[in-house]
Length: 499
Image (cartoon, rainbow, N blue to C red; front, side, top):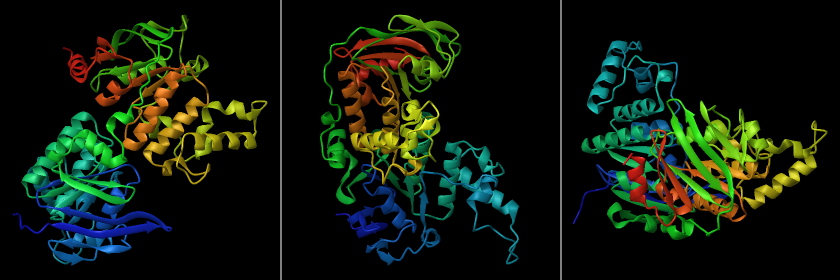
């Protein structure tokens, strides 16, 4: 029987904002040297629970115990003094300061009681931290010059400098490449070996199964269950998170493919992809698979006119097109839902209304100049209801919405233009499994209604669950093509590795 006192217990935690319950009687427990994943849909309460622990929010009721002793976490500063360190999803370093200055900000080593910072000692302490953690960081580099992964390393070093017994990581891989994710996992393994526990907030199931020892599931602000990772499988975890089985997430309806609507022949972009030949049919979902760097995004961006090919042709309904810009693609019924909604897909400071009607403004204007606001508002309100966009009203800034809701705004924006060929590049990146299921339903429905759908995805379950046919890219070349009754995960992965 294990009699070890947990390093952390949160008991009967409840929290409301503006009278709306966000957490309802939630319990959480953390043991030493453990990676404990907290998962659930957007809005499940994951981040709010951890922000209460980190002193950002105050619970309405409940208590927190550290090593068996009840504590009052009044502020982020008091949390840090207790060894509670949280790395937020949105990193917010002081970019003009050096790495060592960021790490020791507010606790700078000084010359005695003079208040004068001992910069040499500060640099050496930072070097010692980096050596211990095996981080390739320069203490004198400006934070603004670092990559996202390097900034994250600096944040982890800062957390360790607080002598923390555990570190909270909130969606730590949201902006990392596959290689950087593997580096982060090695860092987490190293933290465990140094007797430091990690609370890992994520809705990425593959990551959770890769890194976690224990999983706690929240749903609609309520505690659902905690189990060792060995007692979960994907289907069980999804069912606990969203209340339905994983096979229900892919509402695939077999549709007889119609004529070829888009044909790519010999398309080449030097150093990116070479001699690509692809065809897509009306009513078909064509999946494009491949490892990072295979040229998937670059290929679809070229078809959409964001990039220019060096050779090859693109035909739509049998007619060869010269697509020099996205405007050309849109004129011929092509839409691209991009892989980065914040950078490429949305105006984050603009309202839900303005984002939804952006692509199709001419339909709501008189003489192409005067907006017909009443008609625009009516259309937007219909779209909000149709796509179940969770927003206060049509005027709410898109940047304040959840990732899944932002993705629905993008879909609404493009589908209002009624395109015939719709390309989805990583359509569910950064959104929870509940929102994913809704996006999958929309994609399947579009195919049923005769649209040509192309889906680029890094998630194998997504490719297998949605696609009627799959092509696989490896180093910019097509290495395989599979019909729905031919492909499985192993065959796609082998082709993606060039085998």
